[in-house]
Length: 366
Image (cartoon, rainbow, N blue to C red; front, side):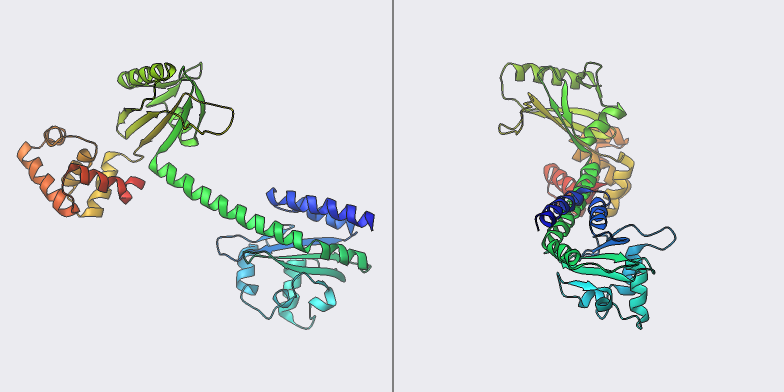
């Protein structure tokens, strides 16, 4: 019994480690195959959500079709198939699992047991808390499995459920992280952690992209954050000097007009975890698209003419009506008329209200 417990412990460890694998559980399945002297071992995971891709170990052979499409088309909604009527956590033999006279069940065996020469098998279904399920099967061609093989497989049921649940949650978090990263990319938002001399301690992926582009920000040979505009670099230098003196300050820096890009220089959070303690945090935010593209989006969103949309974009950047008239090549009177139309069409009551609307609109994500 102690040997079995030791083997079970090793398999459990491999099972939980395998949750982070790519693909998951491959090493666990190889260990289980060796332990039971199986000719064949297979694991199929089917999530309870359309966004959660099914996993088959070993992977489907090239040319056999996508396993997710095959499952959804042929088996996903057929409750009469044996894989759904199996009692949870019970270990089945091949004879108990499949009816050889049922062509659908024979096709299921061909796809999910994968080896037509398998004559003896042990198969178990396990469900995870979120609704996903695992089917795990062991196969032999010449000799049957022992009672201890079946007992070992059954002892793994609760751990398989935990591992499947962890896999589902990890995939959910990866999906959320991917959407969040895409939103950050669309917002053109990034951050830098700086020491007292302005050296970059760490930075986000988007901030690194700003540095690599080198149009507004760059990294000096000794690792300091440098703003390309002289006035912006002067503000950054003065801010760091004040922070080194122990002052709590916040400064804003305009980095670029086209596309529009600003930087907020601020103090790091007092409760920042970890041993690294930056002197300053620089948040960078701006527009990914150029003014022409954003003007088109504004025109479509609020029913503005192109000239009105261009004016609205200038107003959202803090440009006065008189300054906007010069930039657009219009008279001051025409610009004032356009501004009234913009406020009427957008339902805003002034520049500050319009700025809030544009920043909160879908235009900010384009």
